[in-house]
Length: 335
Image (cartoon, rainbow, N blue to C red; front, side):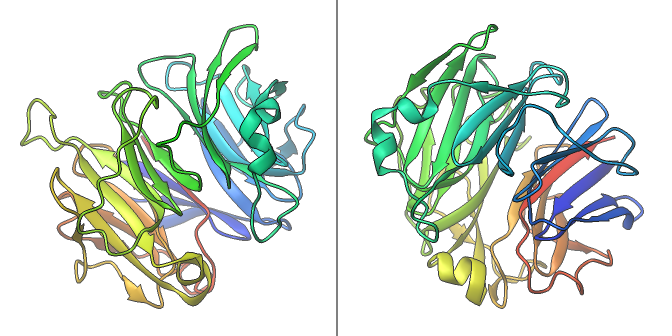
């Protein structure tokens, strides 16, 4: 049993996946960017109305306090403490809440890093934003922070809000869109970036780029599971959405899914989920076990329970309405 929270460009959809029913639809006047759920609180980042917060399953909303920027572009809940929430914005700022997203304080030092002079988001070259925040499951103080575009950074955040930043390392990707971690793999992280795929086994001190078989290297979303047939979990299963370029991923619509089980990448065509022409890049999420994954794109919501060998479409009503929109964020909550 699980609930899916998906944000597209102008709305939030809450789906009871067992009943295949949209239990709540919330239109927003501002473009939605990201979604998170923590401790009974629903959080939606918007591009013009800041961070919107609901404690009654979307019946009412209020703006979270303490975030100065109107554009909230990323959210993350600390795996060790559901009351701790991180938010990233445009222009690039990093904020932390310790009360479940009710109030936030800005964490210092992000734009003081030497590489910040080179950060720029090409469609709006005068600015940049925090695209993704990923806490390390093995270190409650460590965050991976992706600035689009220009840097993948590390931050060690103390309880008092002081931050020890590490600037980008030479092997890190520069245009990171998504970072995935796994609770049983501390110090590991997997990255989908506009300049390719990457992974680390040393908490981001160095990055490797295994791309054999990956014919499309504008990567958008990544999800990771540890298949049960590998008791030691030595080889994770990695799913990746990718396209040739940003144009195909977001505007023309020609994107693909890939899977890697330790060797070369395998393209997943004809598996029950649309790929190729007419398909915008999917947003991926791990489900309630190691072989269950979810994907949301402009054709709808899809699930696999066999590690991506086959996918089933969830018969929800939003697909007709969002056919020309990209999914901005997807969160799966196991009931």
